Image 1: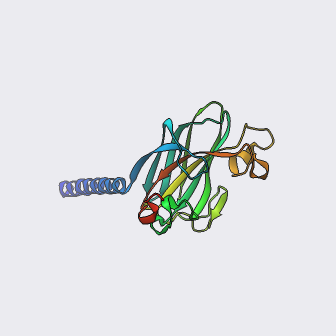
Image 2: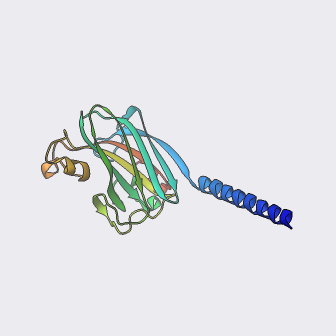
Length: 205
């Protein structure tokens, strides 16, 4: 009897471990990993020349979107922020890469003070809202709804030299450090993850 119970227990443990392993494999299979070039951008949307050696990664899984950006900035030391621009249904856009379509959500991803010219920025965006970062466009109560297919823009924005008294604004607000939305703030770089971009969204005008 003891031997039977012991064998049964070992079988249950083995089955549980196999089941967990299968679940882990399935979860890993549901994740996608993308790598894209970092481009300079003259206006926040148009793609300029690529930044040498720079790249952005995007992982899509059931928990949302996770990104990492490795780049070299050209505006000099200072505060740089990263912004998510999300189009949940890019196939419905009427222009190439949704350039003249409004995003479903544009929200602060992260920011940091960069002492030199090389920097790494990483962030995560969960489906739905609300979001803790500043939302400059879209509905914060809805946000990301199409993890697998959303067209994702990442914008690297410069906010000028780190300035005592306003650093928190520079790190958290789109116009932080640039009174009247003017200089020195500039959208310096852009990374595009196409998602389900098709039709007019995928055809240059």
